[in-house]
Structures are given as C-alpha cells and as structure tokens.
Figure 1 (cartoon, protein in one colour):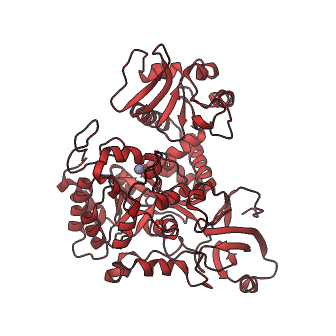
Figure 2 (cartoon, helix red, strand yellow; figure 1 turned 135 degrees about the vertical axis):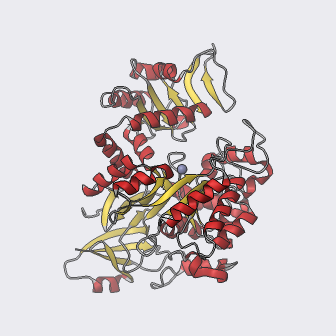
Figure 3 (tube, rainbow, N blue to C red; figure 1 turned 90 degrees about the vertical axis):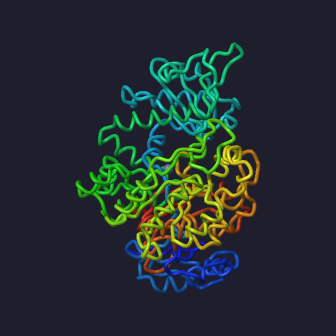
Length: 572
Ligand SMILES: [Zn+2]
C-alpha cells in the first residue's frame, strides 16, 4: 500500500544525538546544532526558511520510503499509488508529548464540551450539561470543560444558579480551559464543603455576589482540590468499558492537536490494561509510552504486561516523584518561598531511599523518570543518578528528569555531564508563569532555562503535563520562543529558543526521551510514517501566530488518526 504526499512544505528535522554521540564537541556548538537541524536529514537541503526543500514523500506500508523532490518521489512510487495533494500545507514530524496525563485528558474530553466557539453562550453550556447528565453514571459529577469567560457572549463566568437550572438534582462542575477556575452548581458546592459564610483560603478564592453569597466560581487552590478529588473518585469508580471510552476520547483529543505519540506520566496497571485493549482493537490513536508509577512496578512485572507490547504501546519506564509542584509551592527549593504557604517545599523520599529506588529500577532495566521541580529536589535527584551511573558513561538507561523547572546553571552542568534527559513544559510559561514569578522572585528569569539547557548539550523533550495546562503542543512551541506569561511578562528573555529548536522539543527530543529516535521524531526514509499536517509553517510564521495554526491531519503509521480543515486524506 503506497501513498504519495505532495504539494507541501516538509520540515524534516534531525534526530536528537543524545549524550553518547555528542561528548565534548557538543559544548557550545549551538550554531552547528542549528545548522544540522536546518538541513534536516540531508534531503535536498534548501534550509534557509527552515524546511528541507523536499516537496514530496512516499509512504509504503506505514513507513517513509522516500522524501525529496516531487519528481524523484513519484519515480520511486509503484504505478497506481494514491496521491494526497496538500495545497501548500506544511508537514512536520508527528508531534510528541513526552509527559502527559493521558487518562485525565480523556476524562475531561469525555465530559460536556463547553469550549468556545462551539458553545457560544451560557444557554449553550446549559444545553451541553443537560445532554451530558443522562450518560453520567450515578455517583459521578456531571462534568464539562473548556470554557473561557471572555469568549462567551455574556463575557463572564456562568453562575451556580445557571448550572442549577441545567442540572438541579445532582452535582455538576464546569472547568475553565486554564484549569485554574471552575464553576460548581449548588449540589457540588455542598458536596465539596463550600458554604456562603466561608472565608477565602490562603491559596485561592471564591466568587461572591453583592450579598457575599458564593456565585459557584472557584479559583486556584480549592479548584485544584476539587479537580484532583473528582478525577480520583470518578476514574477509580469506572469499569473496564468506561476506562476504554476514556482512552479513546483522550486519543481523539490528542490527535486533534497533532499528537502522534505521548508518554503517560502516571501509568497504573488498570490503565495499561485499558490501553492494551484499545490497542488490540486498533483504537489507540497515539504511540503510548508508559511511565509506570513506582509502587505499581511489581504488579506490572508479575502481570507480564510490561515492556514493549506493540508498535503503539510500551511500558518500559518508571515514574518517581521527588518533590511537589511550583503552582502549589511544594517544589523542594533551597531557601523559602516568599508566598503562602511559605516553607521550602516537600521531598517525598530521603536521599538514600531515592538512590536505592533508582538503583533498583536501573538494575531491572527500566528507564527511570524522576519528577523534580525545585533546585533542592533536582540536586538530590542528580546525586542519586550520579551514584547509580558511576561507571556507566552516557546514561545508557536514558534516565530522565521530569519538569526540572529550577535547574539553575550549576545543576544544568551536572545534568549535562551525566547525560540526563530533561522532559519539560514550555507551555507552563503562559499557563502558570505569573504564579512562578511571584514564588521565585529574583530567580524567576532562570526558570525553565531552555536555551541554557540546550547550550549545555542536554537533550530536552517538550511536553504539556496536561491537563495541568492545555495539551496543545503548538502553544508550547510558541511559549518556548516568546516566553510570555498570561500577565504579559517575558520570563527569562535570554532563554528564548529559535523556532526550529522549539519544534525539536516536540519531535526529535520527544522521540529520544521515549527511546524511539530510530523510528520517529524526524522525517527520513525508513522511519515510521508519523506526521502532522499544519496549515502554516511554525518555523516561518510570526511566533505569536503559532498557537493559532490549524492541524489539518494527524497521521500514525501512514494512516490518519485525525482529519480537519478539508484535507482529502484517504482512510487508513
Ligand atoms: Zn505530570
């Protein structure tokens, strides 16, 4: 089965080299790195505008058979090969989210779609909630998500009374697209324990009317707690069929954003079973690479579900949480936070305990992925990696640090030396950056130091941590380039990346972080035909417009998992 893709601009990208291959020549060789990227994999290099110069690509049996000048590609195809003409669109390697809470994304996507413009006003949101109530199992809250108050016709948040009118007799919640606010109906307010006379907590606020009565809108801390509780209770209460539906919804949502592969950052055995079932049905829309939660690993091994199960599903990594998060000011830092709840954050393990866990999982052949956000947590994690990797240069297990937000220069040098892979979230800059700035004061400009990390020779993968923020990789790519917070501050202007390096986070970097760089992450002959079709080229448009680029098609193994914008892509 052959398919010619043509009349497009191809951004081929180059595979990440990793620390084994780069050694000392990588230090400070940024110019060379960019140049190597600009000529892609060496196909017909034009380079200057950031594309490869290729105008055609031949897909054979799910792999890239040829890419280059249109005439050469056509000549390589068998007679009768199907042709897709993309009308000047841009083809990039399939986008990879290297740290994402896939089930949670599916959980939100399975609820009512309250996003604009699809639900233009509050009446439309009410109608969506009414429709969502019937299939919502008893005991679960009726859930919607995606609204933005200033995009609604009313230009404000809906109220509890408006939600009560749609869902009068059971709890209902709609989450703001930022996941920093939500609206509860009266039953949900009661169940969450929120009452009219109650003062605002130190880490958040309640919306109130002129009489001081709760409007149902909840901001920040108490909203995070509502969301975490709902997720835990609702997912735990699901049977296998319901979990399977969540997997499919997650896949559709991620595919609509151009995502062809994702690391599930807290894989548990029941979730893996749901993925495996979807995979067997041919219903997995991404390649899923599981980071199994550390206390589930024994069960994973016992059940025989670990390892690489298929081209689309693997559970070969382990997730350990070293510390908390920056938004909640629980990331473990040196010094103390200047904002509530003050303190210096939380470490979940003693250093010796963390080292023993890393050593054990490394010895059992797992890739170890440690969540470490604050500089103290990163330091302790690097200490653990240094001990375990002594005598193993180049980090052969390809162990990772997840987030690494406060990886300051001395820590960056150590991580580079050890060959640690960093999986971070540029999209936090617009999504959460103002809160980070408040919590980190003078050091805020050193957070998420993408350019310094790159210059030090660290292989960095981009990711969203969704649903903490939107899973949209184009938002992350924009943020890596412009670094502007929602409040308008440019956080660490020296740490802005060039567009090509920002795209590399979500292609070559992601492939390397999930140990699939020989198969995905760049467009070159022999690799799997995973690619994303965009209506404009993210390397040449004004960076401010990148987040508005439309995903016209998402393709995995040569077959579309998403089609938008009228591209006539044949059925896979
Ligand atoms: Zn996470």
